[in-house]
Image 1: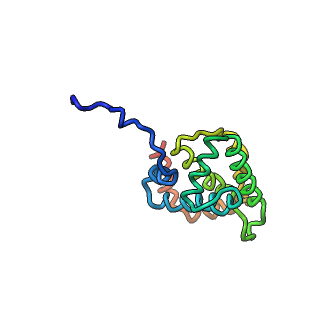
Image 2: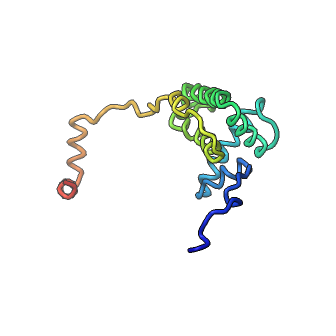
Image 3: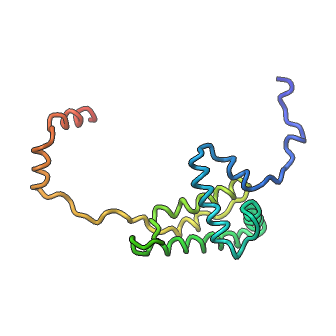
Length: 167
């Protein structure tokens, strides 16, 4: 392995396209589709008054903003997180309602874009603004009579075999 060494040309910094770097970090086609769509929604629709050009230009602009002024990039992302959070408080039948558990999936592509471009931000501050994911059913527990009926119709022997096997 005599020729197994790095040369100066191997470590030259390249200013690659931020969007190409973003997609290069994903193997799954479905992940590319969903994260790409969420990133495009952020860069094109949400930041339409902040960034200019096509999706590639906007991605590079946002990465450059984050490199030069991290505080500004955090402010933009925090404003977006607040906008998303406000949608989680709408009525569930409202067309603009957003499930609280979806908020992180809207922010992940932004983090991925910046991470793949070598830009690190204070993400804890951003994560702390996420809404609580309390979207559980506010139902009731089973009554004794309902449990009794379930047990009458259940294969109790099979159930006990599973319990014994587990423990």
